[in-house]
Image 1 (cartoon, helix red, strand yellow):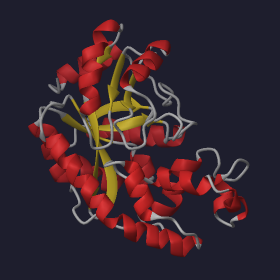
Image 2 (image 1 turned 30 degrees about the vertical axis):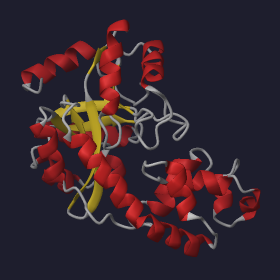
Image 3 (image 1 turned 45 degrees about the horizontal axis):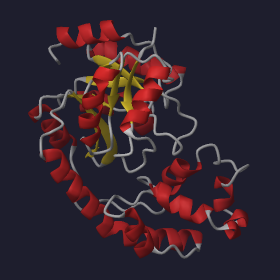
Length: 297
């Protein structure tokens, strides 16, 4: 049985499509019994979810997904059971928005040079209205221009192209992620130990998100990360195929850490990813029982 999804994004994420109530409706339609909304670097959705959850036949676990670095590598850590009302979350988010907007002109300059286009950085900053300008917004702007259909790189993101299955997020992964042509590091990076401390200080526990996407089969770096007081590994995720699931499940069992699962559902930003479909079998009551045994709740 799989009736748990612990990795869902709402409109409070810079790349989420749905309001919290819409997510709860989708979860109910998918017979989810336990869910968590884990927005990027923001905890606001938890207040909405907790205020509505009594109207749904399901349980809710507060959550957040924190962008951070370990040994110079960008990664995501999920925080569960956090105090979503702690002001640390919005204070940090405000700093992230300012930090990213400060480097955005450098990102756009690199994109313009690499693609030979003329993206207007100030236009996108104004359009973001105080939120983070993400790669999906940049791609959307470029795909609105039909002249780009014949562009040697951009044509792959238009319908029928090799990267058109999830064009918006693929554009980010291909051109703006760490190690890609338009990547610019943040001036103020949250280190892994800082992220874990914030999670623990607000009453939560930490889980390494979709490790296969970040580290492939490099088990040594994952072993090192788990020594940093990380409580679990997201084994079941839309990004892991069956081989990676087996790899990380075996590793989690060896390390005796918590095994979690979540779809990373965003909506139209990642149209191939559906809620609850994360290639795993996690049952609510058994999972909650394990959390209690591990004294995580």
